[in-house]
Length: 243
Ligand SMILES: [Zn+2]
Image (cartoon, rainbow, N blue to C red; front, side):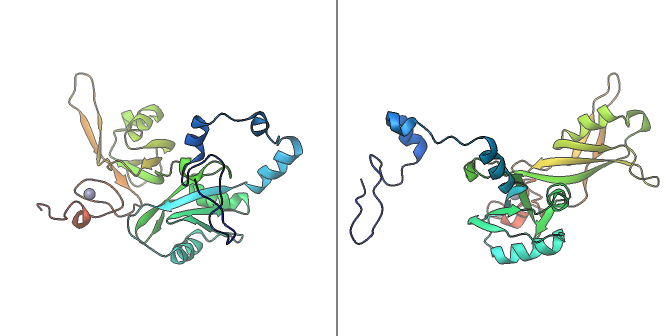
């Protein structure tokens, strides 16, 4: 156990080893009555607190490379072009907290991405202001995809939704976004830990499969070898791959 010293060293935590987290500690120890009885937060008190954590998002750049937070904030400041000032905070290396000051700014940040920093995706997740920051999954990137040349017969909400859901979590479908070009458009949340889908297939009964290409409107850099975002082929494995 750590001992506090008069010279002001590490603080002692009763019954706790240095570095042990609270979860494993709670499993090991029995709480005393006084320790268990909590401080209640409800009613107006919680309402006021909730106001403080409104429009909060956690963000990280999907990259293994180092970068300066200042330059990320600068890039986002220009990309977002928000109505009100935003004061981002650095929580850890490559983990940031953003708080929008109005609904319009919040929607801009959360719904109009993907946001790119040096060609890498900024992954955002809504935050409640009190959960452990590492418990918030930060692996979804919102993008627009296009699937060209789907025959009119299959340009139906349910069919297109099923096709788009092979690419990511579907948020929105546009069956006829253009009067000149023939494609359907979908807003999807991509899992950045999974390879990008290049094609989707319609399996028709008593007919050969119809295969459609998937186009991405804006995308971070990705690897042509493994299909993952966040690095390029020359950085994948030892970087030496057949052409
Ligand atoms: Zn790769």
